[in-house]
Length: 97
Image (tube, rainbow, N blue to C red; front, side):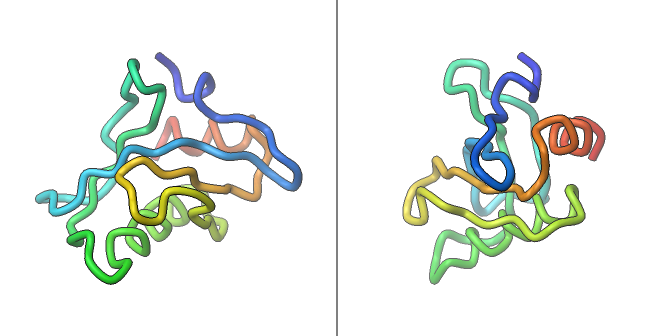
């Protein structure tokens, strides 16, 4: 499954569903979960006090070079991240981190 299949257009940008794996030994995107149709993101931070959420936002922001925010799933491993870019630009950047 391609990243282009899991990024969708919303007003002012696009959204991507993310499956977070906290307390990992490294941070960054790990690929696509084909069953859930989500981008897998590993983070070193534990899921305490919003630390994992901040690291997810930081990780995706570093890849896309724009400020990304979690819009749904703040207390879940399954999150939705808003990226203020077109789908084509976001896919291009996420496919080549």
